[in-house]
Each structure stands twice: as C-alpha cells, then as structure tokens.
Length: 352
Image (cartoon, rainbow, N blue to C red; front, side, top):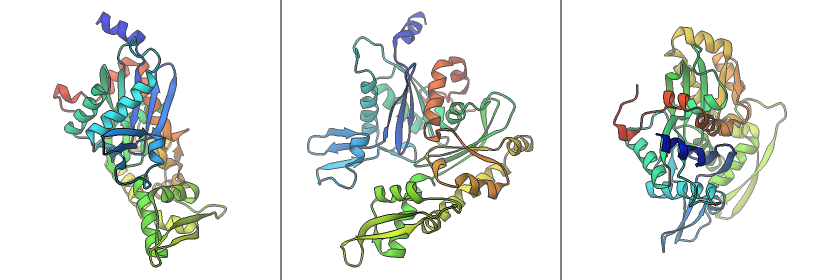
C-alpha cells in the first residue's frame, strides 16, 4: 500500500477518452496532452504501424492495397483488440518519452460506454494493461462527462446529460453519484456523415467520401433553421459519368439529410424522460439538459431539443473534452473515483 502510494507520487497518471472518432489523453498536472483521431495506419506486408492519429486519418481512402487505415473502435467499443492495444501503447509511450524507463507505470482512468458488456470491459482493461498501465479504472462516459462539466453529481439533484459522440449518443439522468435512467443509441456523428453521403447519392447522383461528408456537416450542418443561410461546395464522383463533380449545397438541404437521425435522438431523450422518476424530472425541468460530445457542436441542436422537450438545453463549454476532463478530475479524487467506478471485469462482479 505504501509502495503503491509512492509509485503514485512519481507516475504520470493518465485519463483517457477512448472515442470512436477521437482519443483524448489527460495527464495529471499537465492537462490534455493528446487529442487525435482514433485511426491507425498499418502496412500489411510487415504488420508494422505506419501512423497513428492525425497522420493516419489523412490516409483514409487514399492508401494502396498493402496499407490500410482502420478505426479500431466501433460505436465506442473495441472491434480490433490488437490495434487498439498498439494505439494505446503509442499514446502512453508518447507521454512518457522523457525518462520513460525511470518512471513507474501510470494509473489509467478510461471512459467507457454505458451499454458495454463484461467481455468488452475486459478487452478495454487488457488493452490498457498491455499498453503499460499499472492500474485501470473504468468510468461510464456519461458520468465522466458530468464530472468534467462540474455538475453536482453526488447531490440529490437530477442532472440530465446527453453525450453525442462519434459512434453513440448516450442519454442519462444522474443523481447521488449514480446513473438512475439511461438510453444509448447507435445514432451519432458517424451516422450523420452516412446520412449526408446517402443524401448526395440519392439527390445528386454524387458519391462522397466520408471525410468530405464530415467537413460539410461541420461547416453547414444544422438541426434548426439558421438566421443566415450558408452554403458549401460538395465534391465527389458523378455516379453517371464516373468523373469528378462539384455542386453547391445549402444548410437547408443538409438539415433535410440529418433530420431522421436528429428525430431519433430527440425521441430517445423523450423516452428517457418518460422512465425517469417524477422528482428528478422536476429538477431537470428547472435545471435543463446539458449537451456534451462532438455532436453538441452541430448548429441549432440545442434549439431543436429544447423545442421538442419544452426544457431548457445548454451546450457544455468545450463539449469535445468533457469526458477526458472528467477522467482528469477523478485522478485527483480517489474517493469519488472508487465510488463511481464500474467494477473491474477481472473481479467478476456485476454492476449495481
């Protein structure tokens, strides 16, 4: 125990938001040091990793046959264990570059999806340990995001948080340090990109790449009418001629493309409110709903949700980093961390 405390004094403890789209890493006493796409590029000839993060993302859709750029996480869950392990090892090594051999291995807090299975939980733990972690703590992403936004999660107050990531949207109501009701759906940023690709195909016979669709979503995507109409260039391959083609699209067209996904998210927020105890619903009505994750940056999403639920909706300050900031705060508060941590899969306990 004393030895462990001594190790804790010198190790660079780490908080990780292992996301479908981006992986963010928080180092104790330093803040967020890594914010890179969850992408790994591999040379199939010799099984070597060529690039991780931003450099690997640039290669998506542009690689020769012997190189693949893969996303090892699907819907916030590890789909390729070996590549995830290599990616985590790359990030942990990057932090420990100076004097790596002298420093003890870090304690690691990782945000995981609410609907993660025991097998998937074990995969995250094993990947982190193999990548060099001394101890691994798994925390529900919604809880980490709420802590990152400084919500009073330990009080007898209903806090509703909607975390819209790349692979999943998690809707949860938190009170007294636990999640009371929740829903998680596989409709989030990646699905919205697919909506835009599908729309371009059916309306304009234009085949788009995923990166182009995402850029358009970021530039002109919206969930409610904008005060000023905006336009963007949409470039892809004409499905009729097979040649490159560029068209101009406006925010109204992209809003039409995203409408179905946004409706599903709103319907699930309403469904979560329906199964929430009335005392907590009264708190939420008074305090509002907090949006975090990259999806919270979609223009007008707060207005669309507020209109549908008749509840005030707020976008968190810097919503992209809410989960990783929460894991960072937990590194400094072991009491809270132990209270809210999902039990390690290796312990074989079921969650309460």
